Length: 261
Image (cartoon, rainbow, N blue to C red; front, side):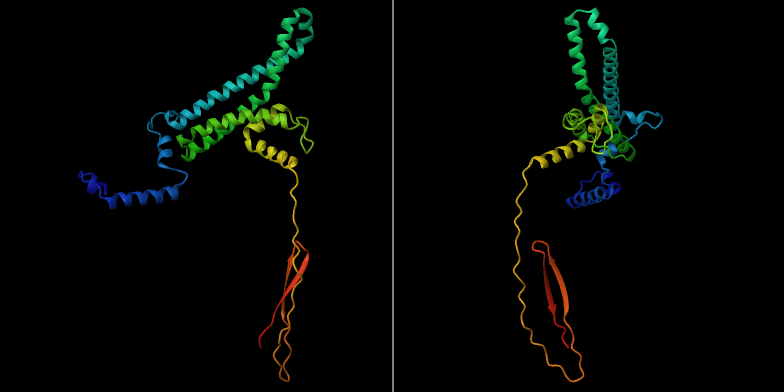
């Protein structure tokens, strides 16, 4: 079609356009989730440069996630350094500085202690997005239309990291495995489904139990079956019994089918 019509500058007929659309639909189904948009977003146009793949849409997305990850990691390291210095020098600081400065330092310490789970949640979400981006670049399935979804994932991971610490006891899990708030926040940010499953368990616990109505089935009706007369020497054939258990009323209903001679 390209050599015959496009090269000769001929217009495509409606049948040609319909045929192209049909072929494209077949390719989309066979190559899913790889699409023309994902191939264009991960296409390496400069083969001479080793970092040319970072100039694509997927590469720019990965670079942005690098910046977010290292920025959040810097904040986490700064928070841990301030926490360590305050806990070590708090008695000396209370004796040397005035009460106003010490109260300000205490407020900052309290704020960053509550901020740590949220930062670890954001860091876990960044690690998850980077892991997905690496897989999508390798398989060429990165779709730029899903960028708002990744940003929403980062926000959800940040909120989940802090909320899951408030909802779940940080002293230990059900298996009596000790886990810190930072680790719990990172897990909540990396796996948002953990928070949602925890919320579902809390809602199911608080929700009143539903009343289950038990319907008792009536007793089985046994009807007389006229059996054919047996000739001399013929053996009587026994009917085949199929038992059906009713869980509601714990009753056994037997259905008999008579074998015809």
